[in-house]
Amino acid sequence: MSLLSKLFGGGSAPEPEPETHAGFRIYPEPEKESGGYRLAARIEKEIGGETRTHHLVRADVFSDRDEAAAAALRKARQLIDQSGEGLFG
Image (cartoon, rainbow, N blue to C red):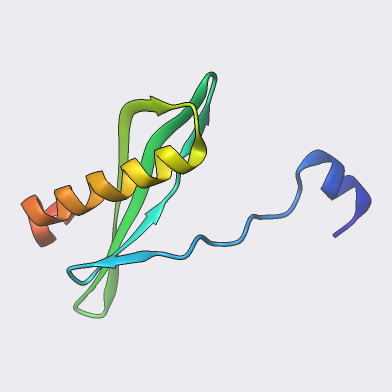
């Protein structure tokens, strides 16, 4: 990575390790907001050989990134338990 990329945030962050719940993959992806991190996650599942994706974003904002990620995992598990594959459409 070049010096300029390091200074100005170039390059991409490594993909977070997903949590698996009931056959779904959950990627916590807190979004930086002024004052903290918004609860957000990506939920994926292979259905018929195709990867289906649902983006979960809530109004909740946390001061700590790890708290936002933990809350996103809890909310995603709850959503999966309630909706199952209906989550995709």
